[in-house]
Image (cartoon, rainbow, N blue to C red; front, top):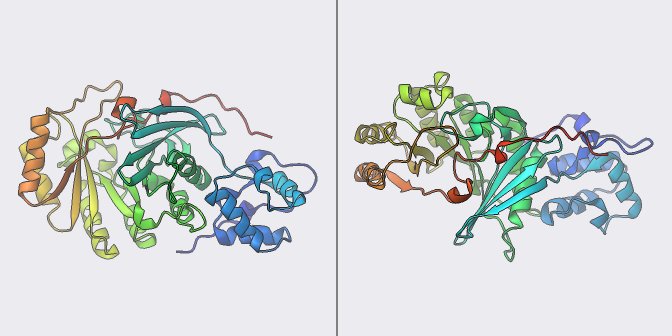
Length: 376
């Protein structure tokens, strides 16, 4: 698909001193054609765009002074009208097994987000937040308790991956997979997410193909169809978590707008139209809420008409909620019913639950700082 930005996003030739940071063009968020247009409007050679792409996306450099193959005059000009998004890391917490790291970043306006880096053999995955907070208010999710701060920009999305990938040194391609499963509902920040997927795939950058990207959703049916049309190779993960509208609406208020019948129809249509082999359903098992044998049998019936896989996620505790994880034998029984009916099922014991970095636990240290104002 072709993405374009309003011309106002591409800045203008400088007059006088440097612009405030918020008014400067974020190089990290520009697609290659947009960056070439930006460079052309400055009267510079086209190859300068390729140099900038390599510095920003390939080497993770955010300081123009470090871009040593650009002339000093050009670097000074860029500083006046442009910037390279770089999130401020304020906390880094590593799990006991050393396989998961939780990063907390401060945004320029004082809001906080979290990013999780996970290592599993040769798979190195970055879990990206798409929003500061979330508006959907899922009852079992810590992020939902925060409410929505704002959508993140494409540059902020990409920078999470660039910074987290540095935790995997010694690899030609340090991050192998990206999942938009952190704070927020990715499909409510659709344009920025799609732009970030395109930027992450740049060969002169992290070279993470769309086939190694998964976007999770709580069930925004129209946007599921749009994602399948725009990015058919991107994986789709649906946070399901119930087999009846009554229970799902209690857990996930979005179900009032897009009930299960519509959601499952969208999943089936997406699998067929996009040629995907799988749609993934994420199902958080909550003791006494959605973990009965009948729930398992209903889940089999719901997912029988198209290829899919089911990730069972034993509930991860969150503050101020009384929900509990089912006993191990109940989890195993639920999984066995699915497996006996030839469903592809995995019990996903979440990585990082000892550092509250697991599914549903991200809350950016449960705080946001007052706005610090734009940097000059």
